[in-house]
Length: 408
Image (cartoon, rainbow, N blue to C red):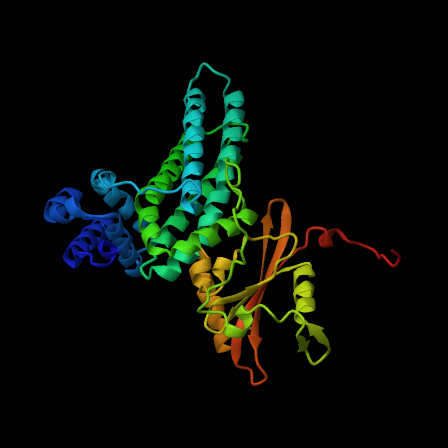
């Protein structure tokens, strides 16, 4: 662990200076010469620390991603020279790597259809249909990205203070999602725009290979050393609900209760002996078990954050709109969102705290469903802000109602 803690600060500073100046547009050749000594000795942990500082420098995310791409191109040879991490077959990270191998195989197959797409002697409409099928298959990788964002990232954040590289990776996940959606639409057009489609395909391939490289050569080696050994088993258990991409879900050897962040939960709750305790809601009494049943059977998703912006609860309905795992308990709400939308979260929470807003609705079209997402401030008897709740509800069928129904 010492190699991850006792970094050469001069090397980190030099690498940061190189990446920052490269990002703001300085010439790479002169910068490489100036910082060659640091580049020759860099480690995966150095890059994680440098990207954290770059994110904190408030550079625009778009510029930051381009600058990091340029820097990693320079660092590529040195990164590949690092000793690869050795993982047991049943390790959480090993399953992520297995999914990556399957993704690489599919990307390689899809390249053949891309080649045919640019062959003027073939029926382009038929080739476009094969491309659509291939893109839809790539979208299975969403389960891989969701497990990272909702399970791996929260555990890494708790153990590793310089975690803001995760925001850059999440932003690339979103780039991949957006390019896939754009490709599916573009490939349905009657008059196919080859130039546009080829650009989207090139960007998609680049981003998906980029994520594989950064996972296996940068994030995984650092996470393996930073995250507590017992946490990896918890991550596997939480992965069951979210699912896997392309590979068979592993059989969990031993079931155990996956607890939330121990620093966040109180001692008496961690005993888990309160199922029959009566709760007085002023308007009636319920046991804790009944209250849990009530919350989980409401036709809505509910997530609650406290006055310190930390997630403290989410309900567990039979059908969920957005992925959740126990790893997010105690996580700041800002870290539960991709970087490009954090400013909206901050603006809304700030309005709740200063009293200028008490609620805010949003609605989206999602997988053919119309979903209403509402946020409500929570205030005590004196009006002091105590947190807020997010309530998501599927209104698709409700919007179709008309007339009356008075009989069962």
